[in-house]
Image 1 (cartoon, rainbow, N blue to C red):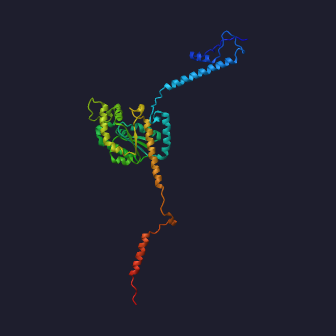
Image 2 (tube, one colour):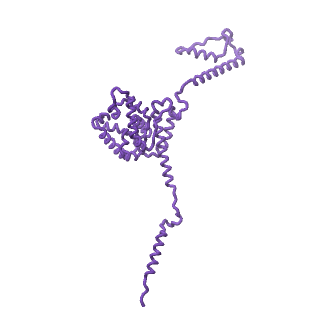
Length: 347
């Protein structure tokens, strides 16, 4: 008969935490410290009792985990019309799905981004170009590089708006023959008809945002970077109020030009994004979806145009053109007239 011996912990092993020790105690059979352990003393009743305690403990832990999980806020907005915009894993899958379908039909067609300042054309354009494996150009940045990296506000101040618009139009003209490009244009690029002639070679997308949203974004970045907003701004005035007033006036002038775009992409945010607008990946997905719908509609239109047949094709033997009935009647009438007009020979 053997007696119960204490288990010695090997050297170098860190003792378990108190919680782990308590949990382990539930898994071990209850044995009297003073009673000797023999095979006869460990009966089926002991085993059943230990088994029941183990499963009861596991059930309790499972209920605790479920209760904690119910209280955790996953950051999603209940009733969100586009729930994938708050789940980046799901959004990534949807972006890949629409990109795979669009890439084979887009065939390198350029995408032009137009919209008011603060609509995120440059930010969305960079992400879109990376997704489509396109090159990205920002007309404002190209103009700055061509002027020794002077900011747009300084070029406006030194050269004037007309000079800036001429440079912008020249860049649009030179980029239009190329393919596989995403081009973010200035807010006023839509004002010149010749620019539309070049941009409509590709697909023009209008990033359309609410004035309050645009004003908040522009005010956060500083209106001193925006020459059209900074000009004649009252000193000490609320930057967001000034931005809202001037943006509203500009949009009123430009709206009819923006409406010439091939697709319109809203920047409206939902839930936690209501104030700052939809996040960039969500805007890009909306844009890709709109462009794909446009391309697929064009394909269907072309297929319908090809679905025709020639009336009376069975009469066209050997692909020769039949003589016009009107022409045949005219020729017969002419022949008859000539016959009647002929005089009989004299005896």
